[in-house]
Length: 320
Image (cartoon, rainbow, N blue to C red; front, side, top):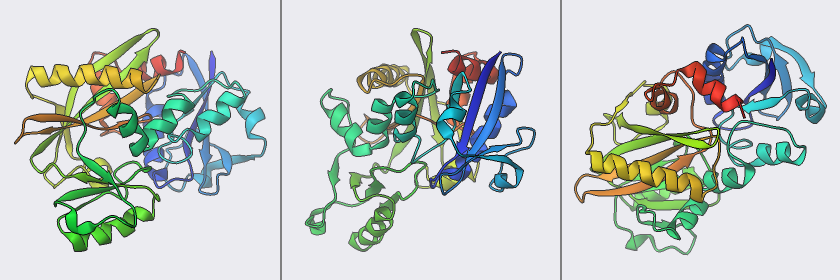
């Protein structure tokens, strides 16, 4: 039986999302194949083994069994690590680099692709070289003339996930306000053209041994202006298999495979697109190297739609 360490939490704005995702993993892991332990990482980056018989929530430290002082030696006791952590310290490549330094096997994209994919600007620069269509954007700096900007625009910290710090500005006053908010999360900020009349489309990629499973296309049915944090994790917005034209679906699948390979991803990713209904243009939006695994998350739903059970998804991720 393979010994698995499942990590959650982390020093990130997405700490609570990780707690939601880890419950999905422990509810669906095949206990006939995997003997697992849970370790939570708190906001001070301290590691605690926790009771794996209890549901994880934001008060998880109340169920701590021991504090782990020698993290590396502890991790080496396991056959593989499943870092179900979103945002800083995991999706940004730091944790992956640590594991690679000590030859510890783990689930998820390697440090190289994690670093690039977590930085939205780096991702854009890489993909521009391969002619992947992207929404027009500029990089904010203090010398930027805000008078020349055509509104509305979407303001994004380059390194942040789950739509945190992202807002739509319809005028100069709002732009200044949202730039201040974005700066709280990252020093580098993107200002993108806001595609008002769009469809938000997503594709899941799962590496299964030596082949890639490319899912059908999911769509966010959002009654608000855009797919923000509340829509992703609070309001339980509908996510469905899209009925968009089959040619657009095929384009998304082909781009997803190409992007996954360009960025040298492995294991899994969710790749997001926007379709401009007015101009009939498809744009790459972003890539997530450790997508959400909550009960309403698109990634497991899309792979499940391919005839792969939730239990099988987790088994395929751990059987590497």
